[in-house]
Amino acid sequence: MVSLEGSATTVSEAVETRRSLRAFLPDKVEPKLLKEILVKASRAPSGTNMQPWNVHLLFGESQAKVSQAVLQDYDNNVPYDEEQPYYPDKFFEPYLSRRRKVGWDLYGLLGIEKGDKEKMKAQHRRNYEFFSAPAAAIFTIHRDLNIGSWLDYGMYLQSVMLLAREAGLHTCPQAAFCGYHKAIRTALALEDSEVVVCGMAFGYADFSAVENTLQTDRADADEFIKIYS
Ligand SMILES: Cc1cc2nc3c(=O)[nH]c(=O)nc-3n(C[C@H](O)[C@H](O)[C@H](O)COP(=O)(O)O)c2cc1C
Image (cartoon, rainbow, N blue to C red):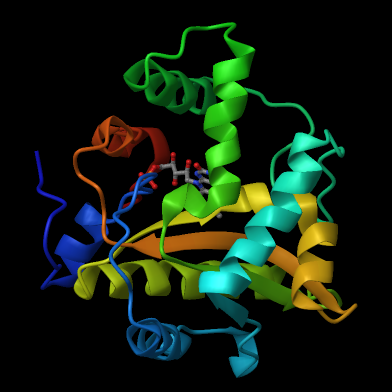
């Protein structure tokens, strides 16, 4: 098994050791370091160099403000309401099985049994605490941009996550924030034109946390690659 500790020194190592980690140490992450990562990542390609990314980098009080605003809605059962659907309206195979597997594997590690809605909710709630990470970001995009720019955005986000590995950091991308964009909009005074793409937790991983031992599968090569000669 590949070690997730330390820093990645090659692109392959960064790709292999990038995991969505869900427990972080309280150790501070320097704002300068994260800003450097966000700037370096902006070398990501984008159609006609439009660079659709827009980052709200959060530490300390501002991070707590976003967390509290979202948690207030979450705890008061304000309905989840995203501006752009991330998932299909109805899951189907093979996506349904893959989604279920990662969910049950995570809950299994945490000792959460099927049907224990309270514990599941408590684990989901950890999203809105950014899994205790000492730094976070909310990524937004202009609402008039199209699917191509969202594709470009994904490249930017992966670049951020790989560069974080080079700096010895780990991340968790978090679509969970999209459904509470109204709370985020108020907390950060977002422009009306901005749509929340996702959140992201940044920090040094807590390797003693069982959730960080999660191993996610990938489909075999012949399930998704066809070679033509
Ligand atoms: C855009 C995006 C949004 C995600 N949102 C969440 C989230 O809200 N909460 C969470 O715990 N994981 C989230 N994930 C992590 C996925 O569950 C994870 O990428 C997947 O299970 C594969 O695991 P790995 O990232 O460790 O390789 C997200 C991933 C992506 C790419």
